[in-house]
Length: 69
Image (cartoon, rainbow, N blue to C red; front, top):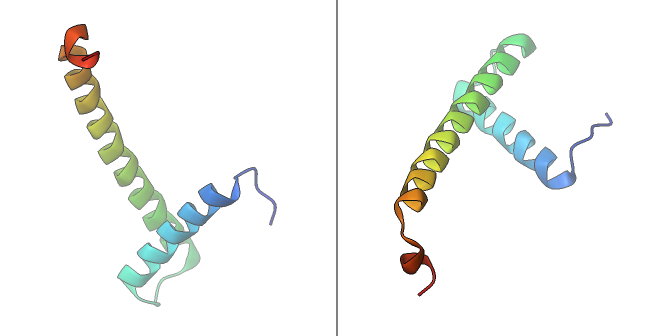
């Protein structure tokens, strides 16, 4: 299958799918597996977004003299 994903991105997606598969066993149909994988990706994106927002807040609180020492 051809995708526009670069190899590193595709490998990360495949790793996420494999992680979900290991966690649920082998008795799940493809649609359910895809849904769980999408939920896992959404959860991971939400965690990253929260971390970035926290980091942004901390960086905004810094004074220029703290950054350029």
